[in-house]
Length: 209
Ligand code: ADP
Ligand code: MG
Image 1 (cartoon, protein in one colour):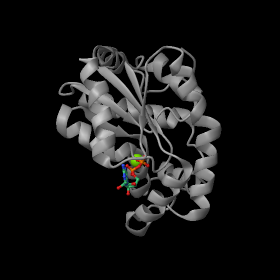
Image 2 (cartoon, helix red, strand yellow):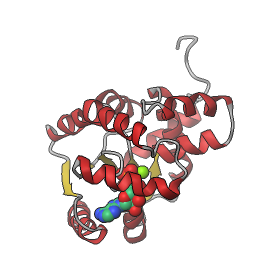
Image 3 (tube, helix red, strand yellow):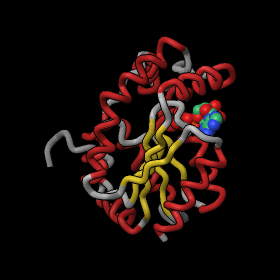
Image 4 (cartoon, protein in one colour):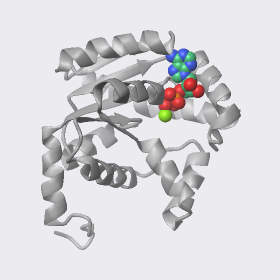
């Protein structure tokens, strides 16, 4: 153990993290505005999974006004990715906190890049399935601009949306190719209505049981 070993890595935490391997873990991946959060809400209602959105966890940290939150805010306003260790530690803490009661996890908005997926598997567990929420660029922009009217999100503006889409195509699309090789990717056509997309989701989740 080197000096850089995080104080979070206590034997107790390791034991609790180990238990996460018995849970279903579903990555929900797609561009900004593709409808990940919307579908996850529906999945929670029907299947009782625990929904963890890394974006929401990060935004909660920002609103807390902590020093870490201030640094995160600057990165998110630029449409860039937050450092890997920060996201993964937050995610693991949130998963461990729910481990007793959870039927499984929906990990929404993670991994954003292949390296994040590799680190997740090293520190937590491999995913059982990846739901790929696939919407075209125009659809995503339209939905984000509409969401921006009421979301209050610093990144739902035209300038940042462009950068987020660039980041998505460069960093996140390779994630899908990476998991496709393992045969766990289920692609959803996310151009349709929320109900239409959810029907496709159900087909895949029912097959998982
Ligand atoms: P993400 O979490 O992938 O960024 P959201 O779930 O927040 O996306 O959806 C982005 C916006 O698009 C929200 O305002 C949501 O209400 C809307 N939306 C999501 N899915 C659909 C859909 N299938 N049809 C129309 N609007 C949608
Ligand atoms: Mg979201």
